[in-house]
Length: 441
Image (cartoon, rainbow, N blue to C red; front, side, top):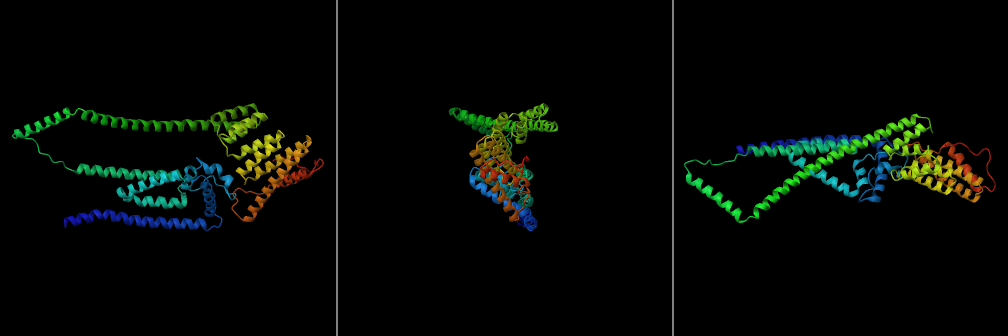
């Protein structure tokens, strides 16, 4: 009877934990269903918008499925591959974002870590499973596993399970009683026999001297390895904290210098000094590079922008600036290449496309005035093609009834730029009439 009572008492906590898991899972599933229905019921609401993002992200992921594209893939590339003009600096799915950055290999490693953590929680801390289910199911529909807080909570639950396991093992070890028989003074023969056995064991070790050095070697190796692990861990943590503080301080200095530069009048030496200081602190910011380039002479600005492509190769505004400089240098073909690259990286940017058409018209007019009429017609024809693609894309967005978070439309002045480019492309005599636009976007 006592044995049956103990077995029933041991099974009671596990049964209660399983019941709690089922109830928590049901509650979390109901919340997930309600959240999903609410998001998808709005037609072109959040749910459908995210489905468009995920579809574009999956298509991008298939291009580099195994190793991924590298860090911050979605934030740097989504404007070039998005199927509609949504605003989405985040893909709103942590696992999909991880797949874009690290590929299948990264997903496999994270999945293995997840499974080991869940196994540890289920075996050693089943009372934590309801919390895991709530975080997991809620995160799948709301946070989408894309916030750092979710990962920190999951790590915390795994560490909690490990701590409970260690505590349980310590209690079990402390509860075991070690039985021994004390040596009494009356049993002198037993004492002598024990001393004799210890002496013989000592002699056996002396007869095989290699055993002691080998045992000492492994002991020293274990101590050195443990010390190296501790030192390496401390060094990594210190390097991480120190590097973070150093990099953050540089970024903060760059932000202060940039704001100070923007408060100065345009083109003044004071503004240039602040921009150069900001660039030295953070050469990875395209807005600082572009602002500084506008204060420099043409070729120096071009060199600065080209060098910045090593830090920001996917930033469309840098190519817009390079196209503007090429147009000012009367290099129509080079300007066309830069503008085409900028549009390919951000095709739902109406202001950028309108600016590209303006500068294509300007460079075509300059080439015509310089006497290079054939070259001017070619430049204008390339501008007409850019305008027609822009116009068609704007019509598709308007007719498609898709979510237009970026307010992508055919800009008002783009109509005039396109018409003037058509005249330049088909003209046999100087087409410079007063109605040609002089407005700069």
